[in-house]
Amino acid sequence: MIYLLEDDESIRELVCYSLNKTGTKAVGFETPSSFWKAISAELPELILLDIMLPEEDGLAVLTKLRLAQLTAKIPVIMLTAKSNEFDKVKALDCGADDYLTKPFGVMELIARVKAVMRRSQTPAQDTEDTVYQAGGLTVSVAAHTVTADGVKITLTFKEFELLCFLFAHRGAVLNRDQILREIWSYEFDGENRTVDVHIRTLRQKLGKYADVIETVRGVGYKIEGTPEK
Image 1: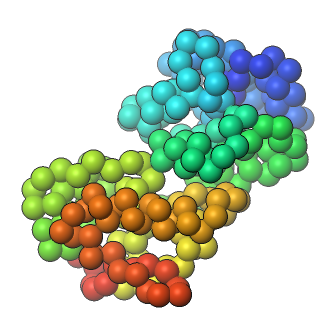
Image 2: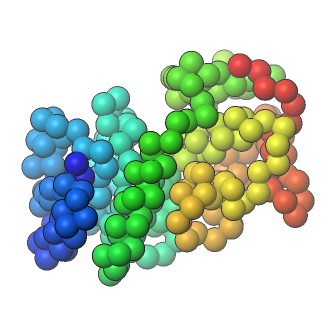
């Protein structure tokens, strides 16, 4: 089951019709209130979410989805007319799994949906009780927290995923394409600087532990050392 929250009736009908024709059941909602009512009754496998909506915008809806335990891991693809990279990164930082800019082709939409659903069904490398440590820096996957010398560090959804991905492959050099495919899905068309920007802001937030993330010139990034779990 796929839920589509889109206030444009023509787009809503086209997307639902196209997905239903492929054998994937899709239900459309015009307003966030009707969407939330459906969520409380039945959870979908994936959500297609517009940004410009009545009642509350899509980013606010996405944030609520990611904060609620029952919906935190449901894949979300954003559908919006906004096309600049800043808006894409903002949506992805809030927890979106992928991003499609209007107007989009039906075949591309279906391909993206299949890719995100396939990726979401792939077993995660981290277990729920995984805890990574590097000196006084502690990352708890289950609690979704990062602390430095006991002080909590607030990260965006994607910053946390990025840090966990680096820790999960501790000692290995990860290039930008690998990081883009894993954290932003392999279909994401962002430029390589998206990774660099996130690494830079992540280091700023880690403070004195910024050097935990090493730059391997001309290749990518890594966290050195033997995994501590």
